[in-house]
Each structure stands twice: as C-alpha cells, then as structure tokens.
Image (cartoon, rainbow, N blue to C red; front, side, top):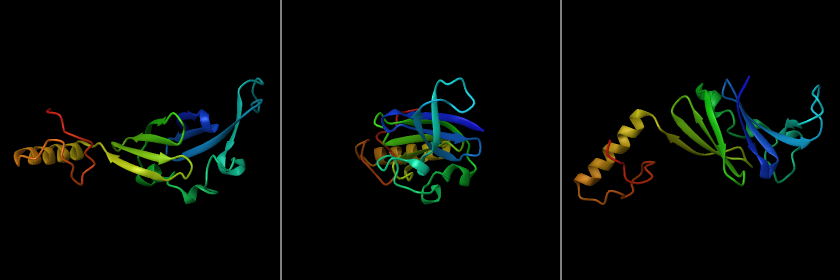
Length: 149
C-alpha cells in the first residue's frame, strides 16, 4: 500500500512511496476518477504517457527509484522543491535521499544516523582542537560547524 504522497504541481506529477520502499512518479490529468464521483484527478504511471519535459527515463529500472526497497528501508516522508525539479525522501534507516525528478537518479545520500552524527561531531572537535576554523570543510557531509550538544 502507498504510505506517502507528494505532489509536484509545476510538473503535473505526484511522487508516491509504498510500504516496501518503492518510489513511483505519476502523471496527473484533470478528469473523472475511475469508479469515483466524477471529481478529482486521474493518474497514470509516468513513463507511459509522460510529457518529454517531465521525466527522461522510460523504465524505473533506469532510475534509483528502487533504492529504498533495495536497502529494505521504509519511507517516512517525501518533500519536493518548489519547482518540482528535486524531491527528498526520509527513510527508516536514518537517511535522506535527494532525487532529481527528471532522471529519477539519487543525487545525494545523507546519513543522519547517530553514528554518522557522532563521526561529524568528532571531526569538528578535532578541527577545533587543531586550531582550524570551526567551519573548515573536510571530506564529510558536514554542512558547517557542528553545534555543541
């Protein structure tokens, strides 16, 4: 069953996630719903009849939309950028994946687990002890100085 939905109005799409972690992009069209009351929107899976500017893939196998399912992580929330070009999915494995809507590719994987946060805090403390500015960059995903606990 679908557990999360996120509309992408600028593109006329909806992104869904099911309980197994499979992500889907759906094209929305005005019109009656099948078996409904005649109100609302009809949806169809995107690659079938997608406008060329909405997505650039023909099959989900060409994307990273199975990334959560492969790791057996459950989706928690989906949010999209205001222009619909990207969407982010938080998952039960304490990660955030940022996807490009057009390609379905994962652009960034952010690890927000306690171990990853402790590692970033340790790197920040080490830089501070060496006299480096607290916002000096390193190879981690650290987006800036780590606040004190």
